[in-house]
Length: 75
Length: 150
Image (spheres, helix red, strand yellow):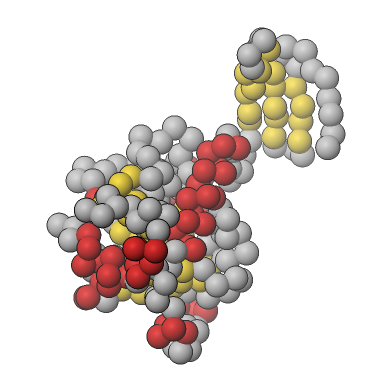
């Protein structure tokens, strides 16, 4: 892992389209500004991990679709 | 836990005998979906006796099988705004009719949930799909549609 020390308002550039800037640093957290091309997804790690875990649950169970459909009785 | 095993234990054998669908009938997911990044092509399987649920099966990469439901069937008035990156990835315009599917999961206690936060969106015209991950979603990842034992 690359490690940089940055002060407030200083930034890091990744490739030619991504910029990560420190907007504010405090005791409880660091506020970052991200500039990235529109086709580069940017997510908080916990959001991505939550979706990944949910997808695994949805897949691993392999529910019987007909049983599910009968049980749900959606309108 | 065993009480609800019938919901998930016996789905596979009959389906395994079907030949793998041709890739050209599959929907491409150029970014994969989180947790299944190696799966880039899926098919949608719908039938009358499972409506409104649809099965979503991978046809490449590791075997992955999901059940999806139109989130508007779960929550009337459901809306989710697609960003420019989503529209570009789906090659969609404002006029494109998109297919929406929330992934359905059976939790360990038998509760059935739908992921309304991060729906699968498909552009049928281009056979392109994507799981949308809004950073500030209005809806939960585990929206309960049928409580355990109900």
